[in-house]
Length: 155
Image (cartoon, rainbow, N blue to C red; front, top):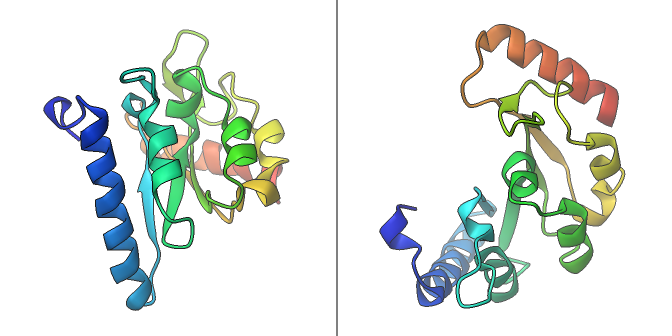
């Protein structure tokens, strides 16, 4: 979403409605609709966190979440808190690591305690883990190193 598309809670409520409609259509077609967060969903508007609103206002049977762990933690949030409040809503997650200085780094080189998070995979409903790095110095090395670290944590 562009900046002008995320200025009010009413906008986010309309997105929740849109997600429910898309979820119904996807369900009818035999596929699942999921939403991927970034950091802006955690910036409160009128005292309400848009991400919480999206979770609360969408139908759990129709709308799943693909939690981006990097953006969630960079925003100062704990993914496990969301797993506890909204169990089973997170079948997908983006796995990328956060350096102490706030930069994105290969999985295993940063500060995120993936073992702690993945220990709650059943509560979250996690089934699919996607290694990601937005701008790695060497994409092949980043993908390999991150995937190897992820394997040690989940399998």
